[in-house]
Length: 149
Ligand SMILES: [Zn+2]
Image (cartoon, rainbow, N blue to C red; front, side):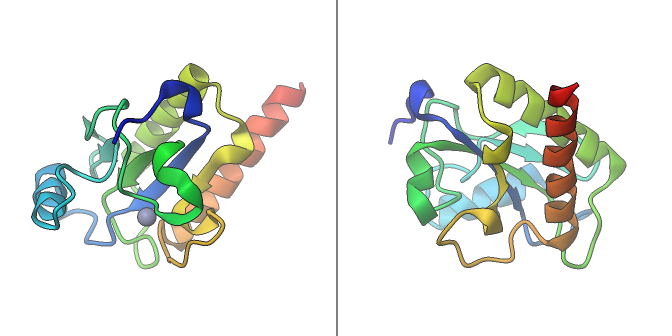
């Protein structure tokens, strides 16, 4: 399914829900292809060392968030880890911040539309885990504070 640039209004952050230091882009991609998704579900993937890997093309609808019709209006970014039990690494967060700011700028996305998967209305998931979702709440708060100055 195509993802039209003008329809992209949300950025959705995910966790792999697997061990942060043991999980690779290749493993997740292989798993999603085995599940029949045709490709990795996400547009970007960030491993424990902060390396950003491109998943599916930004012009292709993701299979990362079913709720609220998000497939056709969002880009998905996934961090390796289970953030109910682990913390993201400093490098992962630095990469996440960089990619969220870059995508928000390129797609003119509202700060309040940068969400953890669990924050999407109608979704019933722990994703992206407690510690990563707390980071996202602060990230939005900081972005909005900076805009007011
Ligand atoms: Zn998710």
